[in-house]
Length: 435
Image (cartoon, rainbow, N blue to C red; front, side, top):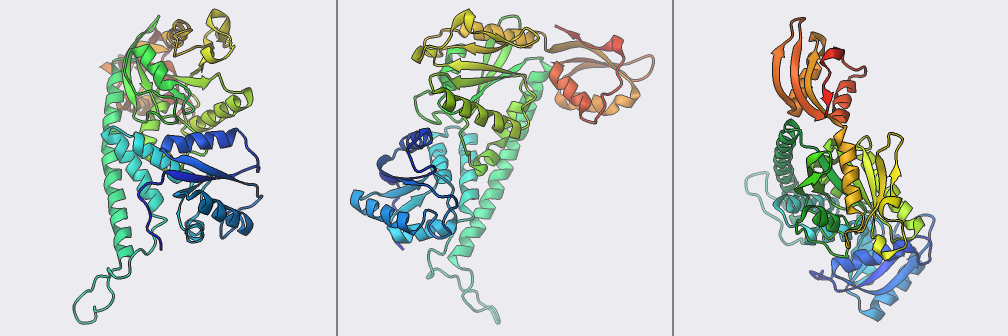
């Protein structure tokens, strides 16, 4: 086998799709540039079904081999998942490293991770992906075992590598579970203090970090590249009508996000389910078809995370780059009168007042604050309210049951009531008062 270089600089891209250049190829080029590689050439592949040996067929494989030799490329990057067998076959044919879409995105995440949690999440995703691709690298490192009946080749290097990977995955999983527990405690403290949480979500490079910095005065790294920031950041924001809220910046989404990353970042992404409001940042400067496709991709990931019941505001960003609507004329309202779409520019600051007003309107009528009377039959709901950390006080009711002083969002309260099917019986006179 050839020696694998630590990092390739010149890459030949294999675009598996319609056989012609399109917006998907442009996004692929941006991903490659974000990883730090230069595009040396592109091979377009159009097949109904992938080839079992080379993925792209024998003819295209020979064309790719000639292009690699001509451009002296260090690696080949394929814009789709490649099996371990296909990867090995291509590497033998091409004589250079082969990287698929999952490897590419994992590499970008590894470069961008800055916090301890982010590095753990990326390492876990990389090891989970690597665990299915370990091959025999050395045959001379077999370990001999002594004793009668135990002599033989012993443990091969491949078996040792697999065992090390399994142990490391277990260790990382335990560490991330501890961090997830800490996040839950922090979230309970915020809910107990009745501080609403607003999260920015959206496709990568839609401008979430720039918007976050504009609204909060933070200095989160922001650049016109894919996945500029990965690590979640929380800051205080004063919203009209709602007062103090916690604004969070989340990792950007992308089409065909690797399953290993979704699993590794699940502790972070689950914050979406407990948020009181999601701000879906959309790149308004893109062509309509591509913009709508990205919106659908984000909506699908939100559904997969079971966060589609959280209220959302769509913030169409980068209106300074196009002739989109702006200001007061760009508002779109829901049936209840609250704004659901605003047009903004995080770069110039245009429309941010409208966005903050929309955040305040959504949150002002969503907070439940006061005494809640629960009968004895609602003991399970009482336990859940305590688990949420929203109970500020309790005393026994004269009629039996409990009186709980709670502060939480109306949406979360209704979700807890309906988790067992029918809502728990609650005395109307004891319902919390919206503030």
